[in-house]
Amino acid sequence: MTQKELKEFLDEKVILYNNPKFIESDPIQIPHLFTKKEDIEIAAFLTATISWGNRTMIIKNSYKMMELMDNAPHDFILNHQKDDLDCFQNFVHRTFNYIDFRQFIKSLQHIYKNYNGLENALFIKDESTNYQTAIHQFKKIFFEIEHQQRTQKHVSDPLKNSAAKRINMFLRWMVRDDNAGVDFGIWKSHKASNLSCPLDVHSGNVARKLKLLLRTQNDWKALAELDQNLRKLDKTDPVKYDFALFGLGVFEKF
Image (cartoon, rainbow, N blue to C red; front, side):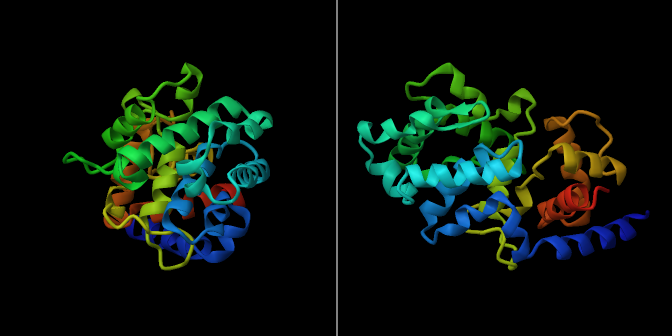
């Protein structure tokens, strides 16, 4: 395919999958339960954090997380008492357990009380055109309070060459304003042009078949290569192609 043909093909797939019907089977349905900005972003961040493995289980356990926070995530984060975390004891999603969940509650409280919330904590504060250093700095902030070492693995560090798939997905949800009602676009201080595609097995395999990606590992170096090629197709909204790559991989077994 020529670049023009590839763009036309992928743009068609974006239209096919970037619509409200997509929400029904995707973890993004969890933040869509809320209307308040802080509730949406906290629900989205926690949901994205456990978004690996079976999608049905991801959705089920994300609903459970919201219930444990009385379906009022922002209020719970800010005002919970130590005893309120006792009911987390039985929570587990794969390797993310109640110890990690409690830590995330405390770290999020730290971010909302001292860093003006997630939008500011993940803001790109240097001249970067992607979130590599912003995510690295965010992880430092997240764990600057007392924590158990085991929980650190649940926040990726792109400076250690992680593709940071789950945080990039969360950023897409918050920053990208798609006019189709799927992504929220509520972080007005951020730019969609700086976003990176959430790179996983499905999107990586499809990207390689379409020659958008040559690197064989799904790491940050691969993401930088994919970024470069997707920005040639749309420099203002490159991650809209996540819908195309994901849809082709998951729904069409491309």
